[in-house]
Image (cartoon, rainbow, N blue to C red; front, side, top):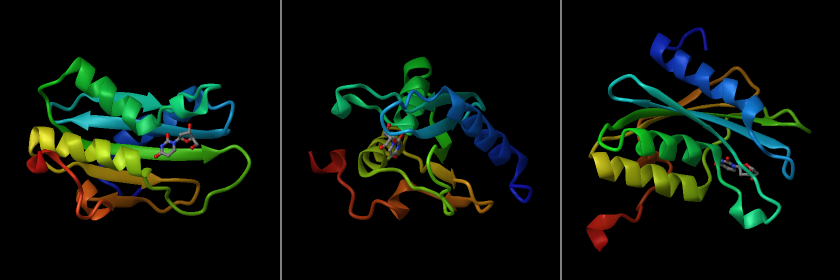
Length: 145
Ligand code: THU
């Protein structure tokens, strides 16, 4: 993290701070996320679970929807995502689930700009992706509709 640009580090620290706010009594897998908008504002999120399991909502989607609900017309430049498995040490960055990749893709399409994705788990290394296209090849979007 020491080698990261200060803006990315700040965003990742905002995501890490969300880990303790996750509501994850069923999986015990906490996800913290933070989205930076092009105007510099940061919107946070964490995963929110439900006894009816399919209703669980991923942390990165909470952060992105929080951003969109507050500032619908401001593009998202970057999203940082981190995790804490309460029962295990995860020694490599965890990447977003398929549903979240699709949602990030929609945000890229909506604002016509790529979103940098910053990933960190328990190990010191950080992965930085320049676009969700790197982890969602041949994605589906509105151009097909
Ligand atoms: N989860 C996320 O928040 N983001 C992901 O990309 C993958 C999974 C959450 C959902 C659920 O609360 C817990 O992690 C275990 O799947």
